[in-house]
Image (cartoon, rainbow, N blue to C red; front, top):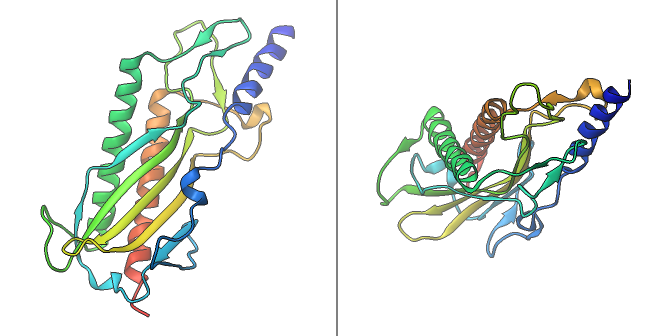
Length: 226
């Protein structure tokens, strides 16, 4: 009974360390010339009033950028007093995987909505720049057999940003700031916690990025000049 109680306490402690932190990017107001537009799918959507996003059917997509939250991968202790911290090459591998996943998600989402993906800027081409800030990946490492299994209530979180510019003039036409949590459960009771591994985190972030990119594409299609 004492061991079970300690395991639950350790799990709840881990959950407590991953509570959302407001992103500085989310606190910024609308960029010059853009106005907020109500969206049922996105936290913040800003559009230039005299632009016709729906008129663009070609997009060029910049390489995406990601940035981990400042407190991610800090030394933690489990109930046995052991520390968990990823090595530099592990962090690099996760960063590469998340970057590739977000890049692929944006490309596939806009292509699925009928946008033509092109390789260079030009008239009638929209330039998309996507990034993930304050990225926090829960339990990205596999626990060796026989050791403690770390439980969390979600796979992680990130603030996702997408900026759209006219590729010829460089004028900013729209900006999306949206905070997403991957596979969040309802509570923090033991029954609500799940074992989170590297494979599981990758799967749920892939789903999160795809849904977000699709929501962005839908929002751009609906944004006509006013």
